[in-house]
Amino acid sequence: MEQTLVLIKPDGVQRGLIGEITARLERRGLKLIAAKFMQVSPELAEAHYAIHKGKPFYEGLIRYITSSPVMAMIWEGPEAIAAVRQTMGATKPTEAAPGSVRHDFALEVGRNLTHASDSPETAFQEISLWFKPEEIISWERSTDPWLFGKN
Ligand code: IDP
Ligand code: MG
Image (cartoon, rainbow, N blue to C red; front, side, top):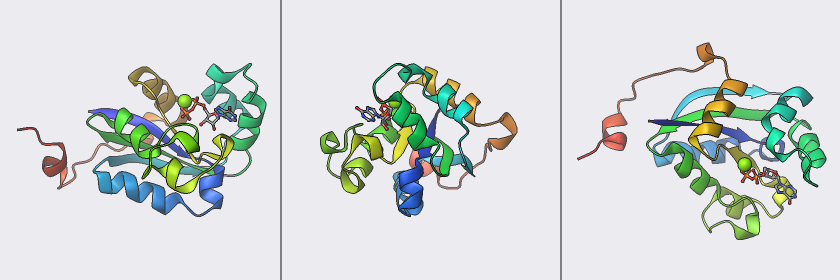
């Protein structure tokens, strides 16, 4: 079963979209296994976005993610990484598929509401950067066999 880090960025929190975005992940069948509402420090922001250091949008990205609280979560499910990125939509909202979060609620790449891990390697790194092991809850959900069952 895959796990993936999801952030509702400051624009999503400020615009009151925590419920809307998490509802889409829940209703798809993904399982929440960790969550915390937090103010991101510059150190955490720089570690999280290290791969983008040197790009023209990097400084603005660090300012954006540290500007106001975020909702950090880990979601679990079969192919959770691809599923969550599909639910969020392409990085640039005007290229995001209709029905995706970024299509339905955003216009600008610099205000695209969410982060989601993009591979098993980055998911592993990001989960260990954002969460301590004891903050992650492995739990049985009564609907799991109806959502995760294979025939
Ligand atoms: P992703 O969030 O879809 O994985 P990445 O390419 O990893 O997209 O970029 C990380 C974040 O950096 C984006 O979600 C967006 O907030 C920001 N970003 C990416 N490209 C640009 C840009 O051209 N201008 C402003 N911000 C950008
Ligand atoms: Mg990315």
